[in-house]
Amino acid sequence: MALPRIDWPEGLHPDTLAIRDGLPRTAWGENSEALFLTSCFVHPDAETAARRFANEEDAFVYSRFSNPNVTIMERRLAALEGTSGCIGTASGMAAITLLVMSLLKAGDHIVCSQSVFGSTIRLLVGEFGKFGVETTLVPQTDVAAWAAARRTNTKLFFAETPTNPLGEICDIRALADLAHEAGALLVVDNCMCSPALQQPVKFGADIVMHSGTKFLDGQGRVIAGALCADEALVRSRFEPLVRTAGMSLSPFNAWVVAKGLETLSVRLHAQSERALELARWLESHPAVARVHYPGLASHPQHALAMHQQGGRGGAVLAFDVKGGRAEAFGVIDATRVLSIAGNFGDVRSIITHPASTTHGRLSEDQRRAAGIGQGLIRLGVGLEHIADLKADLARGLDALALTLSP
Ligand SMILES: *Cc1c(COP(=O)(O)O)cnc(C)c1O
Image 1: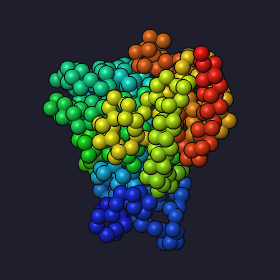
Image 2 (image 1 turned 45 degrees about the vertical axis):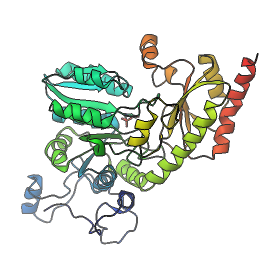
Image 3 (image 1 turned 30 degrees about the vertical axis):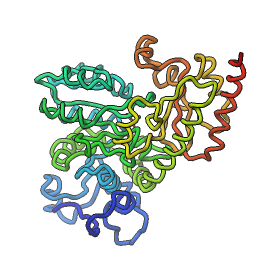
Image 4 (image 1 turned 120 degrees about the vertical axis):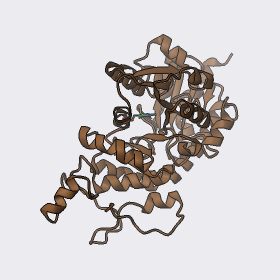
């Protein structure tokens, strides 16, 4: 017996399922999902308990294994990503830990973009390196380098697109074909776009990884993560390890993310529109040297980004001010509405100086190789009124422009 499903008519749009799907209502008939803060679940008799513990019958047993709020979040996210299965995890990094621990063993090999999230590189290279899993880092956009890095023991390709903060795109279809030729799986970290803009499985990816902390929650409240994949893989590999190793998503955080998913699509579309307008405005500002945003026609991979991201650039952009650290700090410190923080994916716009914060642990050489200069500023564009966002940035940028005038 499987967990009950709601009996929907055929063919509902994922946006509808993101609001409506989950588990049938309880006997109380609540309209909005209840919060199930319970560590364990009660069984009608000893025989049933034995069957459930032996996995012969699907039911909730213990919230390290699963919980109704976690299942609701998983079903909604799977509907959005277009996968048959999904598993929630305690954080985005816990999702990557689950991925590698469940699918690889000592002697296996990963090919990974060198531009992925910094903690991802430290986890794969540093931590899993200790256990004999080797990772080769390759340039994000160089398909030939991905092909050349393959070995007979390659089990995973790991990509993130667009990258943070420079918005480099990788060709998901090309990487999926290369991975499959080598008998490996392609995993795509889809944090930057979310499934509201980009569904990597449509382009051949096998597994989609998420930090629920970003756009899925969308209001900067909780830490959460997930892996989306075929249900058979989720059930055979991911669920047993979460049950044993305990990188489980908390019911409360799952409830918050499930609520966030209800508005994901409208938020991403509105935040993307604001980001595009800001990017165009910044591109024409005399104090800005360069804008990095896949939604701009000037982006070197604009066409590929539009193809993969439903015609939208996403809600994260970066720009280089004319000058270095002092000039960038001047623009950041002149803002009065934006939050100076290291996150993105929030309805509150966030401004970040990557070189001294999110990418501060890199050496100056590594940063230069990654294209992250001291004059670079990242914006996680939220939902405030566009005029207020522009005015907040214009305060520092206009002052900087005056100092540049001949
Ligand atoms: C934040 C982030 C992660 C890690 O997620 P946590 O929920 O913070 O563990 C992974 N990848 C990307 C692209 C991220 O932005």
